[in-house]
Image 1 (cartoon, rainbow, N blue to C red):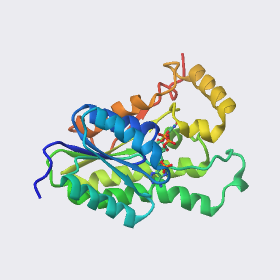
Image 2 (image 1 turned 45 degrees about the horizontal axis):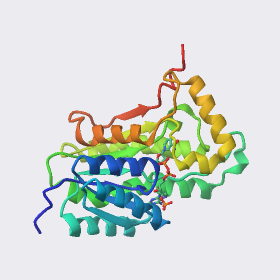
Image 3 (image 1 turned 90 degrees about the horizontal axis):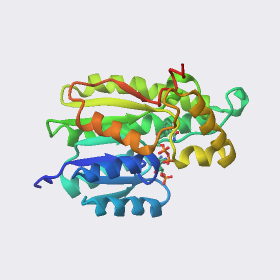
Length: 257
Ligand SMILES: NC(=O)c1ccc[n+]([C@@H]2O[C@H](COP(=O)([O-])OP(=O)(O)OC[C@H]3O[C@@H](n4cnc5c(N)ncnc54)[C@H](OP(=O)(O)O)[C@@H]3O)[C@@H](O)[C@H]2O)c1
């Protein structure tokens, strides 16, 4: 088939938060976008309509990235619709909220479920999309990691370990996929999305936001659109950057002078 003239961005977990903002940004720049979710179609359809309103052709795909069959079907759907994929943003993530000191609160199954999405899911999506990505000269994979992997903070030890594994995998993928495909990661700080609101509850979330603002050099939390900008640069600009993990934390790691 004749490939679409418009470039295509595939964003996992794009019915909400960072993924939704990333899909909207690519749509606003004249790209077609594939929206993905695993459970609830309603928010995915909303994001899809926002992208259509920005002029994009949109494919909405229900796929659990922890399922290799789903990832391969997702790639086949994109191939059938547009015959191309230029940027893959592996953004879908999961966690369990378990206080760090509660070592008995995490079982092997928790690690396995979190790794299945955050690490294996990104791997399976990448593998499924490489045949499409390598058909074009300027293509990229962008993995959404977390500051948790650098700081040892976050929802649980299993989560931060999974994002550390994702960072290492990103470096390995950069070697494996070069010179045709670049692979980079983004490590966001605290992002204003449903993720932490739902996980912590509104009261603890509000306290976490205040504490973050007190400690970060830029005295603010991160918006999903800030991460979308990083996903745009690593996807489309950054021609000589691969195997890098870009921290977007408002200066939390620096702390305020
Ligand atoms: N929010 C933060 O403070 C923060 C900080 C650092 C890093 N991150 C990372 O940023 C990414 C996005 O987070 P967010 O804050 O935007 O979260 P969010 O608003 O809760 O969105 C999560 C998205 O992932 C989808 N999803 C979950 N499991 C999936 C699976 N197995 N397969 C496909 N899609 C799946 C969800 O849709 P369904 O529920 O329908 O599946 C939803 O679209 C995650 O990787 C997270 O670890 C977030």
